[in-house]
Length: 62
Figure 1 (cartoon, rainbow, N blue to C red):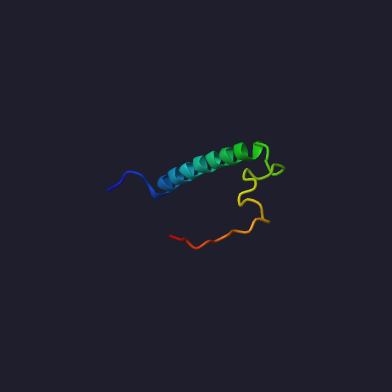
Figure 2: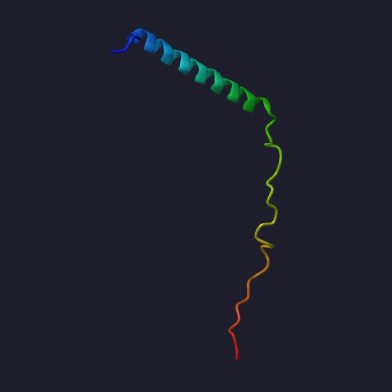
C-alpha cells in the first residue's frame, strides 16, 4: 500500500534521530559553557533565627 520501502523509512527515522541528537548536543554545550556558581553561598541566611533563643510558652489567662 505504501510507496516507501522499509529502508527509506528507517533512513528517515535515523535522520530525525540525528537531528535530535545534534540539538541535544548543542543544548548541553550551551549549558556547560556558562560559569558555575559553586563558590557562592546560599541565598538563605539565618533562616531560623538565633539558636540561643529558647521559645517560651505561656498559658493564656482570662
